[in-house]
Length: 337
Image 1 (tube, rainbow, N blue to C red):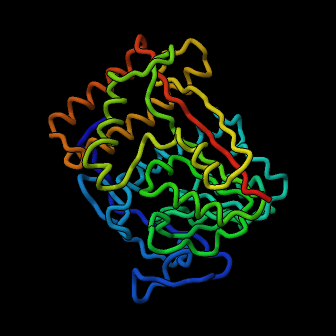
Image 2 (cartoon, rainbow, N blue to C red; image 1 turned 60 degrees about the vertical axis):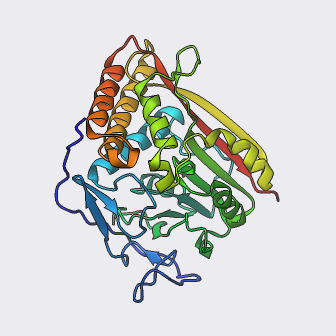
């Protein structure tokens, strides 16, 4: 992991346009019809570059991680770990039946989840939404992507998500400024009896015996992100997911359920499956750590402090005597009939 890792030349993304333009208005551009409203093939590929990494450029200070090839590779690795290991080949838990009509993935990133789900459920219109137009142009015929700032508190979501059987999020809730409003809008978009399913890390990091690993360098990075200028700038709330069951009930969801799976940090586990999962988790965390520490100014630390934390993180994850774990939580709930 290097704090000076550079990216190659800018890439381009795209996607097929499906469906109609419902309720399409825009405050962001005079000539671009831009919200739900803009499918990937019509969105201009606007990016910003800093410290050798590429970031989305449509919505200023909305998201603090890159959207370049390195980040997309990390997202793909994470997608495979969660679907192949945590869900045993499935993509969600919610009981939506064998023939759903509309499935929505909010904060879809590079679009791995919607593409897989569209292939599994050909009956469904599968929609992925994100602020970055980085999804591939090759998709199943029932999959589509939209560019929209779902974190904009001043304008409602467009109607394309309405009537969804399932709204899915993964590693999204911690990064929105107003999670309650986000979840309320999801409730409104679901059809009666539809489900929301949120996949997130439940911090803090723990030791193998379940006690908080407050001195682990990954946990120190979590606290640095959550408590410093980075969170103030981007609105991240890393400790929000444990409140999800209570918040969903307060918003009116029913049948709220949750499931937790411990994931080793590193290859220390003696069980082969957990050791494999820990190795993938280690690779994911290394890239995530590098992407954050390269922005040490936003974290409120010096470059030297960032390098030191980077080195301590690598050493801790390579040390098989350090048995740290992350809690991957899934919370799913139903809109009343």
